[in-house]
Length: 157
Image 1 (cartoon, rainbow, N blue to C red):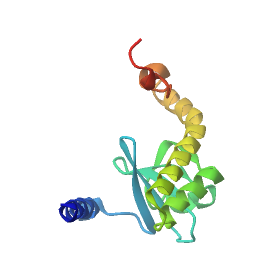
Image 2: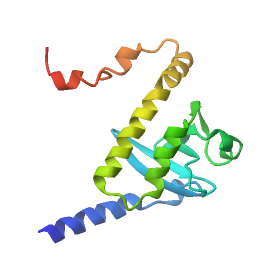
Image 3: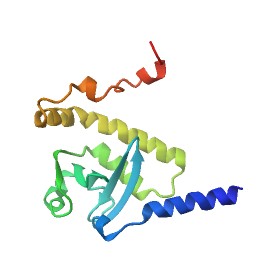
């Protein structure tokens, strides 16, 4: 039974790696990970061991980038209107995901959790930019009803 489950999950994993010419990946070393409902891709364009940019797989727009690589990135993928520079912490954590294939699942999940916290630190600037692009949009509370991490743990009130 375990063998069949292993083969099943391996087949699903391989199917997820399949690409078509319309789905070409940018150059460099790249890895995509699921974060909540999004697929986040990280890439090291010059393959120097440090992630140079991040983008969401569905939009193919860079939303975080290394300051030093900004000039080269315009030729790879478009920048999102609210793209922000990566902090050094974000860059180090995402580089661990890209280059640490031999770490266990719990260590990988710990890195992903730290990366989510690091991303949250950049969120106010991104939210302000998004609000300026969409002045008539919903309030932040309406856009992110589950923003308070404890809300979903407490249940109905």
